[in-house]
Structure formats: C-alpha cells, structure tokens
Amino acid sequence: MPPERQHTTLVAKQFEEQLGFYTSEARSARDSRIVSFLAETLARDASLRAQGRLRICEFGGADGILLRSLRERLGEALELTNAELVDAYRPRQASPAIRFVRTSILQPQFADASFDVVIARHVLHHLIGDTLGATRANQARAFAELARVTRPGGLVLVEEHLNPSAFACRLFYFLSRMATQLKMRLPWFEVTPYTVVAFLTPDEFHRAARHATQLQTLVEEPNPAPMPIQWRLTLLRRNSTNLFIALRRT
Ligand SMILES: C[S@@+](CC[C@H](N)C(=O)[O-])C[C@H]1O[C@@H](n2cnc3c(N)ncnc32)[C@H](O)[C@@H]1O
Image: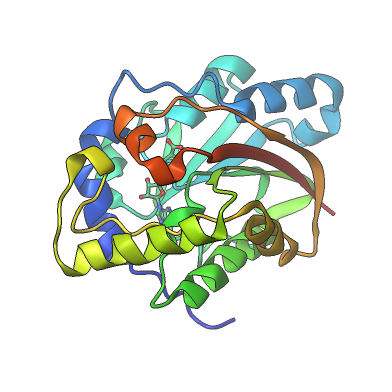
C-alpha cells in the first residue's frame, strides 16, 4: 500500500486547539451505542472474551472517554489502548488504565490480529489528503487497517456522522479547505484555520467499508448523538445522521 497521505500537521493543530472541548469532564460517552452494543454482545457471546482479557483498541480516542465508559460498564478484565494521532492527549487520559499509543489509523504499528475489538468514532472525516480523491482513499484504507489489526472473529465498531447529500459533503470539504488557506475563523460554524472535514454519504461510507473484504456487517443503525450548538447551526449538516455499524472480522 502507498504511504499514508493525511495532512497530519493541520489535524494535530485543530485538535490541540480543541483540547479543552475533548478533555472536558462534561463530555460523556455512556450514550454511545458502542458501549451498549458491546455489553449486549458480551452477555451472549463469551467467545469474544476467549483469551480471558478483552483487548480493545480505539483509534482517535482523544482523552479516552469512551474507553473509560467501556471499563465502567464492562468491568476490569479489559486491556484498553488509545491509538491517537495527537500526543497532547497523552497526559490527559480519562483513566490510568488506558495505554496511550501515538500512531495513525492509516499506518498503525500494531501486528496483524492484535485486538479483539477495534473502534473508530468520528475519525474518518478527518483523514484529509491532498484532494478529495486522496481523502476517500485514506478513508477506505482506514477500514483495511481496522480489519488487519482485529483478530478473526473479533469486532470492528465504527460511529460516523454521514450526510445524505453528496453535494453538501463536497461543498463542505472545499469550503473548509478554502477557509484554512485563507486562515479564516468563524467560531459559530466551527470554521478554523486548521479544520478541513470530508464527510461521507452513506454510499461512500459503505464503499469505503467494503474495501476491507474481511469485514462482515452485523448491525447498522442510526444513533442520534448530542451535538454542540455550533455544529447544529451549520445548516448543511441539518440532515446528517450519526451511523453506528458493527462488523465482524471473518
Ligand atoms: C472528532 S475527534 C473524536 C474523538 C473521540 N473519538 C470521540 O468520539 O469523542 C477525532 C479524533 O481523531 C483523531 N485523529 C485524527 N486523525 C487520526 C489518525 N490518522 N489516526 C488516529 N487518530 C486520528 C484526532 O486527534 C481526534 O482526537
């Protein structure tokens, strides 16, 4: 595979700037469908825990709030890894039980089949490349890497904001890109000199997921997620849905 081509400097600056939001104690992940789905699955499928301890890796977990919620809900027999691009989150992990690894979902250094459960929540739209095509290639590559590091029989759990309008997705990508070139800042619309976003339509999302041929869909459902007001104010995202998808690694 060609090397990753994400604008990591831009993404790192964006999330360093948003450190306050992504490490706020007011943030909670208890409502995430990932937490309830994993609890339900473990209750009826003991084979997921076959090794005794359940090895869970979240890519782009920021302060690890979701991993902490999983620990609170599922108990302590978990090995938790936060595989994050931005090192500034390292000292701000929500639980000392979390192992922080600075890496990219596009080129993680983990061996094949390292984890029983692998998670990516709201990461795909940040995998910005030089062009929209390169960005779509990054998003497909992320699914391939999620599949690679999951053991056969393990689970890949993804939550992502999708927008049904291909036009809106493209417009949002080009406008946010232009805003970074002009160094614009419009706080009410989450426009910053570092924020470029490439949301997917449901079709584009499924195409990216199919790139990982070893992944089989188990469940797919909308999961309404609370959003800060400035995200909701952005009219173009009015119709967007937060999709939860659970895939099994064959
Ligand atoms: C919108 S935030 C979501 C944070 C967390 N997953 C949540 O749902 O609260 C996106 C996160 O993805 C991380 N990220 C962006 N590109 C990444 C990459 N290539 N590999 C790993 N993490 C990445 C960012 O640093 C940021 O923490």
